[in-house]
Length: 378
Image (cartoon, rainbow, N blue to C red; front, side, top):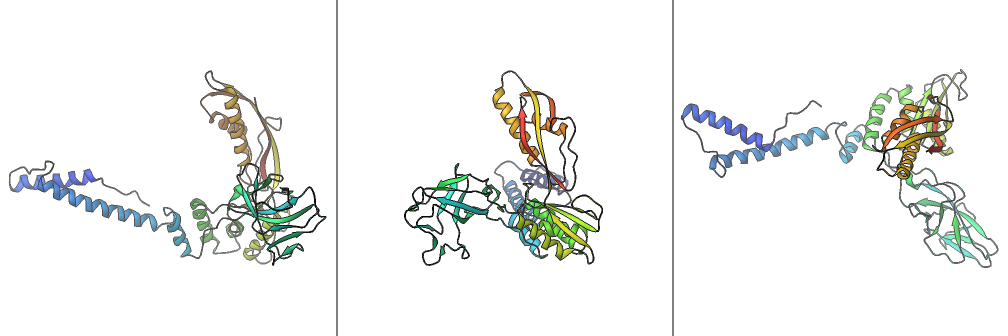
């Protein structure tokens, strides 16, 4: 959108005053009274108020009629006219195991029973699964017979978003009292939780969508994969198999930000590719090749700053930077130093920066995802 020349209330009043005074001087050879409270100034201010309102309405219309400047609901309605919709948030899911110390009596784990992580940041409810042999629709729960000390049931998060993707062993609190049940834990991580697609991501995908209307292109295939769920990234290598050997296969790598996407996501990505691939060309969708890294560095803290606090913050910032590297990107030593310096002006020197014990960058590759294992800052 071209830059608009916008006027303020004061400039509108001043413009009218200048025009009126010039005309009065020319035709009447006199100066008009534009002091505060005068009739002519009141008329000019009233006109300026109407002009300012019209200007604001025009700006609103211009903003809402372009995808680049639309936001929220306006952006949704804009792209819906072209057959595209925003990817919604997804509830994380998984399973938890309820246990008891004395399994002498029958227990019923009710549907909707709540459990949460030890820190209370993620909450889950027991979900119905008619295929589970212990599920009883009449009792609306899972029947755990006497003599059975533990039973595993499915759960879903109460709030959608990636924050409900929690690690194994972190769901340990019972929020609902369940008779004859003492503890709960999750053997595996909860997965597939995703946040709603942001405005920026939707704008990017809208451009890809328009380009994908001519299918069987690289852009169309990547658009199809990224549309499976919000937060998905993908890369494509033509005529190379997942092992990096020249082949008649094209390899699409799919990631959900973790480096270890769930199998059902990979299956969904393969189905999406199948709808867009050209005839006669074989494709395979795979998870990334994870490159684990250990990062170490020395930092010098200026006098007057809490050294322990800043060292901890540098470590947190560096780890966040490494884990945020998108699929296909590498890891730079100089960028790690810049991240450390950016934590605080109290960080006056960063030295001996190493990745996996060496002084070489991790070179990016479309198949790889860089994640951190250990970050050491001293």
